[in-house]
Image (tube, rainbow, N blue to C red):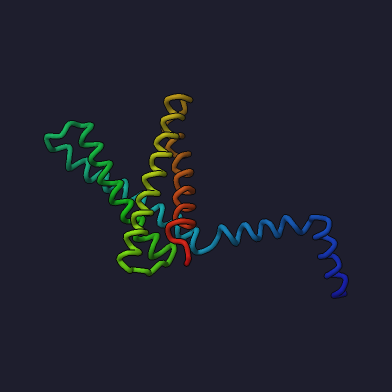
Length: 166
């Protein structure tokens, strides 16, 4: 009886039936793990930090001599910087569990992190511009779609180039 079950499994694999369950099992294992789930949670928290800091800075700057556009753009820069700092610290410590605090290492790592975030920000901004201005896409749909692209780009950059294991 045991030999029959093993033969059935072997036959299923030859027929391709067992391959799909193996594929989905591997995919689930790769996607549903500590690193990817914690990255998504940290991403949501980073977005909250970004929006809260934007709202606080924007409200504070409205009551200054700055023009409305200058106040909004200044609030955006402040909120982006706070979000990138928050993301760096939480990705380093929580997501990728990287506890190397040598100054030379931190400088290289933080510089790479900020550079990757600037690059992904430029890509996302350019994509939004193309989608909205050239293709006539709804700006909120463009923002949502590019946010997904941004999460993937930032994860790949963090995983492969910034917080990679030695």
